[in-house]
Image (cartoon, rainbow, N blue to C red):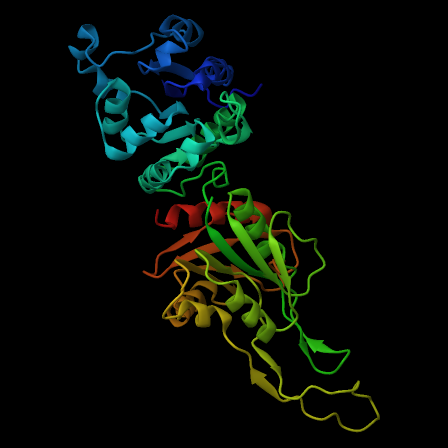
Length: 418
């Protein structure tokens, strides 16, 4: 195995849940990758695993007590908060997440987590109802806003004979997420969900509306104006939102790709039909306007096929289509909490995107270069820039569109108020 964490110093905080037994395997996986692991067990964790077992596997002392005389003579909790490259919390129980979110310092683990400026990765694990409870969602949003990274939880069977999101991510998944965090050099304040997806259930109970694909504006019964949008990015966003637990409506123009599973589909042809479908699908908590809607349509549509008869063709007069993004973003009532637009540009991408977000009134704009050389329209990959209303811009690396969709949904979940 590649020793990708060679000489990295990892403080592993083990929370008090049934999944704590997996922390022992996690220590092994981290050490296999070359990491130096120092365990820290909460009082609850010691009900499931012993400090001796953790210390034996780590090859280092396990810390347990805030008031340890030997440690605190040297202000040990501050040393623990600083003497590492990263902190991993696994399992991160509902109680431990709550203490982190509120800044409580009632035991050694909470005190170290409050005193540290190191990158933190948490792996939540708890009963599905606890994970989906509004209090946990609020705490998760707070932690994400503080720059804490999250991996998992996974779906699966619970100790209480229930099934759903709440299972601890597998040790190899946690190790891979830690590798990605350290390799990327990310510090607190970054994108939040390190694993590239929103945790299962992060959008439970939320309604998400997505538009996707091109529109076809008829010239006559057999011809139309269109663009090269494949719909892949919009469909990927809808699929990722459904995976995060949202109730998703996807309004799609004509595409050749399959409908994503778990979403309500509305198929349309024209921009005007798309606007009607969007308004009928409201209200929504999040509206993501990914579709490449035709800006214009023919003023007159031929009732029969326009034939070539050797004479000069009649001029094709165009009229402007409705602006779906601006219409929804400008609603005085029933406006989605988060309105996201897309800007497909072929030149001056960021300059045009900054103008567009001001003009459209959306909360976030995803800009990308769709010039022929970029291969984005109809392609499998995308390079996006996230533009905020305050003018700030974040540029992401080139990723496949499914991964872009997962990361965008993770960002939307973090931005949505709880």
